[in-house]
Length: 99
Image (tube, rainbow, N blue to C red; front, side, top):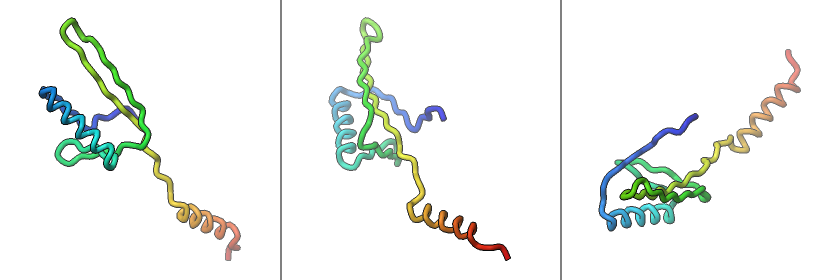
């Protein structure tokens, strides 16, 4: 499955407001690992992430800084007891003689 945008926001802010926003993100990461966005969205960030910092000169007068981090979400697996119950039912069906 290709990348899907979950949320995007672009705006012009003061350097001070940018610093406050970055601190807010850092505090959220440190507190419980969830980043909040939009009206009611949140994403849980893994304990280990891949980080990139890219600084580019776009033109003679424009510079851009991109901070990106990504992670793999764990896949859900059936609980151990569900697997055991399923195996037991299959084994029981195999050993039960047909009537």
